[in-house]
Length: 87
Image (cartoon, rainbow, N blue to C red):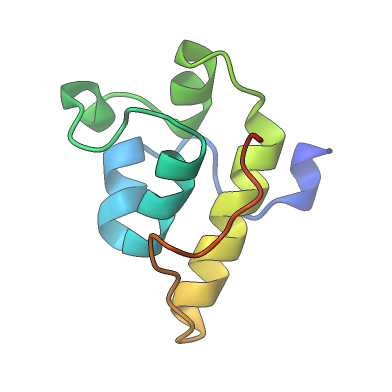
């Protein structure tokens, strides 16, 4: 997947994106990223967090886009909502 297809700025800090759009927390959980409550979330960008977890950035950025779009359109995702994530 091409990163130009995503709207999410992958330079955003993990903590900032989760605070601004709480629906994105589900994406981090689905991808088994341990970002929730991590003290490095205030320093790590989405790019760096993916690198630290050995995950490809593009699919996670696309999932974050969908979570943000859903929250902005009033269709908040919950932790039980299936996301693509790893199988």
